[in-house]
Length: 399
Image (cartoon, rainbow, N blue to C red; front, side):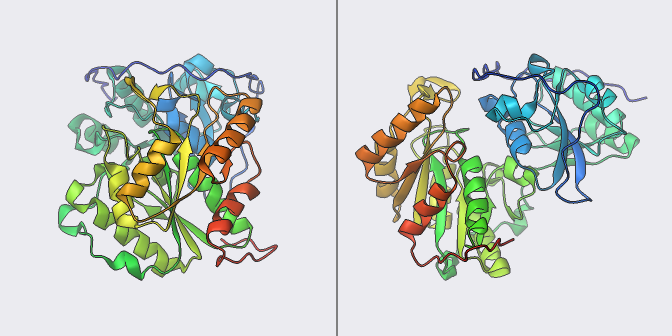
């Protein structure tokens, strides 16, 4: 029997989900999504009160795409009974949402391999209620995937519970040992293929989603693209190359990213490298974008913006910057160029998205699209128009 201690203060208040027409999940037996690989581990994603909202970005990302795990279900009592794909994108994907872990397990054949904590709160630590749920998952025999700044392996209670249950806790954000951290060397200039960073005007605005879609679209068009992820969600999704930059000591941030990009270049010989952004260069609470611009020295930048977001995520007193002001700041800070703008359509109708695209193209003089609602060919064209040396191979799909 595992004792479940209830400690730690609660996390910050939840952010209400964006309104959208929703459909209930299929009743009775749960149809599992087809696995990409036979050996893919199964997982339940915990996102209580936040699925489809800003702080649920890790769960949102895993439901949209995961190379490492087959997502069986999502836990969020506020959306129980709905289909996760329909909540996010209006498209059914047969990943159901349940009210709690007991209900999720009752609709699953056998015990899933992993319990993934899918919330990315500003506080970065578990509440007392969440600790209880994680202990329950451990007691049920599930390995734990934790993307928080709070390393659960360092908590004696969690470590003891995991040992008793013979399960593993993966602290995704834990950086490599300090003696192994790498300083910036300038070797980024040895990477001869174009490097494109997907940056944004705020945090939790869709940079990783756009970078992932762009990478897949380029590969499908015959341009070999490799993505370097810079946050915990991309690592949990199964990215081959990446690091959680906000957990790396600042002295080593640029060097760790530079070294990761070099490894991707030397190991895969890509035509182009796509780098996931973090935060925003103009955001006073985050400095990761500055390290990304220094460590990756991108040849081009795609900027992600949410036209209907009025204030910065978690900072209601801070108005959102305009794309123009962010572009000017990026251009002043780094020797690079912004080659396109991508739209986050939160709280926007399709007509509003089309109007925003036309307006920004006229104002900024660069291509504009929405990676989720517009043809991915537009993203590919955005890249090829700035880097014509990237030649298509029609019909080829590069892995």
